[in-house]
Length: 297
Image (cartoon, rainbow, N blue to C red; front, side, top):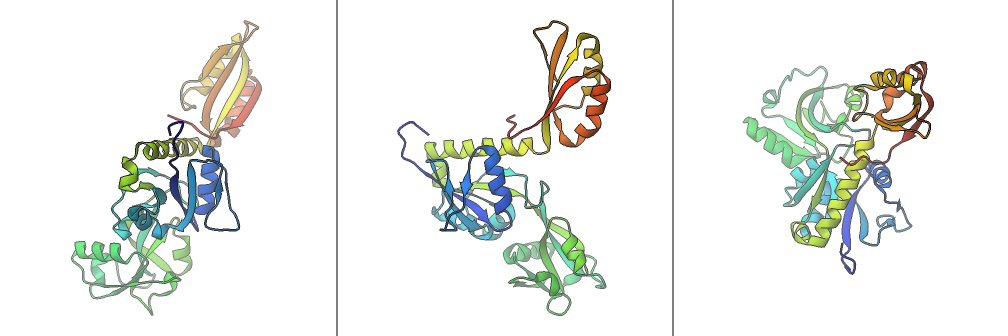
């Protein structure tokens, strides 16, 4: 924002299952968020931002109405609410990792149902009532859809013929004796903005800053940096070991001793445990592995 700007961005962050991973992500992006006695209004070390914690299901509606300038929520809840907001970007993370979550149609293992079309005249329990109705309407299948207040997995077969439920791994469904029939929608975290706020240059600039730094933190996920020293006679061998291992080609710098070089590379953390012994055998010394907070492409 401009030097004398008084504009403050009102940002909504998801309370609940995404809260912990979102706070951690913002910390790696450069912001410190602390919960307070007020609960839903945490402190953030940025005078240009105010944070409000809301359930992801409600976020898009409050952004649309202008109570919030921007917010992070699931693409699924934006679709379910029908809110008219600007989608700034998507961030590929969820409560348990970086994979998208899925809304799936599930039935008991013993059910004869094999597809959505087999549910003609059936009853479906779900939290995403509007989306589910639209999905079956598009399929030309007449069903009744009822809102589920929780414990959705236990409702079939006695209280519903099928459910449309959110899953990351499918483990909870399997544990409750259910099998997935179809995936209706994949969803990831979206950053959305109020359309009027998006037209404000100061607010748009702040939103773009958040977008860049949070995405940079996500880019760094699962990656580390490796530094090492190598003599001239082993340099070619070490570079051959590192070939195609890094994010880009390794950086090579000559040290004050002209016979020694420093090599720096960014790579996937899961490769490091197998690679370091190979680098050591190739003559590398002073091998250092260091964490990364952000990678800005």
